[in-house]
Image (cartoon, rainbow, N blue to C red; front, side, top):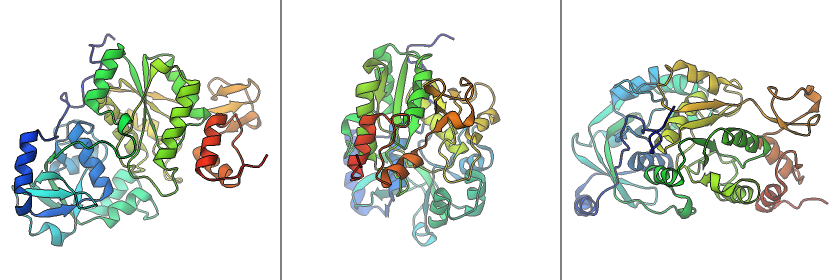
Length: 392
C-alpha cells in the first residue's frame, strides 16, 4: 500500500485546531470579566488541550447527547465515525442550571487561570451506571475510571471550545510535540510508516522487545508516554521520562525513534481505551499502533487479550490505523533472549515474566531488577528516584 507523504489522514479527515488566534484571544480576554465561570479538574484540562491541538480530531468540543449516546452504546459518534470513550464536561446540576445556552462560558484550570471558553450548546443528564458498565465493563467503584464517573457532576455540558493559548508543558516542554508538528517531523524524516507506542510505565525488556519487533517492519517508532493524570501508585511522569531518555540513548537507533509526551489522562478503560489510544495516535500521524497484553487495564477487570479482540468489532479499515498485536513477552532462559510463545520452545519454568507491577515491588523490597527485566541503567535510575538503597 503506497502512502501519500503525509502518511495518514487524521480521524474524520481534518486535523482540528481550536487554539485561539491572537485576535480571538484578545476578544475573549475582554469578555472574561462578564462570563459565567467554571473550574475544570485535571482530567478535563487534559481533554480540553487534546481537543484544541487536534489529538481528539474530529471532536471540536465536549460531546453532545447524540454523540455521547452513540459512543457509550455503540462506540461510534452520531455521524458514524468510530469513537470509544466519551469526552464530556460534567458538572453538578446547581452549577449547570443557571448557565444560559448558546452563550460563552469561561473555563478555568484548577489554579484559577482562565484557559478556554466553551460555546455552551447543550446541557443533559446522563446515566452514570450505564456509562460505567458500557465503557469500563464494571460498576465497581474500586475501578479508578468508574470512581471518576461516579464522583463527577450529574449534568454534561456540551459545545465547541477555544483554548486561549498553548502553554509549554511545565515539566517537558521539549517533548511537547503536538499532532501538526509530529506529522511534519515524520514527513521531514521521510517516514511513511510509523508505529505508536502507549505507555504509563517505565519500559522494561518486554516492551523494548515488542517495540523493536515492530520497528523491523516500519520506518519509525513514536514513543508516546502518557503524562496526564494517572493512579497515585503509578511511577511519576518525570521519573518515567528520564528512564525513556536513558533507554533511547543506549539501546535504540537514534534516527528511528521520536519521544513525545501524550497529555491525556488515563481512564483505565482497558479494551475501549485501546481503541481510543489508537485513534489518538492516528491523529498524531501514526499508521500503526502496538497493542500488547492487558492494554490500559487495571486490576483483573479485563481479560489478558480483550484489548486486542475489540479491534475485531470494527469493519476492516474502519479505524484507519493498523493495530500490531503482541503476546506477552518474557525472557526465555533456553534461547537466552526475549521471546513470546510464538517464537520460544521453552517450558513455562524457563520463562521470566516481567511486569511494571513486579518491577515496582522489587524496588520497594530494595532489590534491583535483574538484567532480564530491566536494562541496568534504567533499573539504577528507578532505584535512585524511589530513594531505595540497593543492597550489594
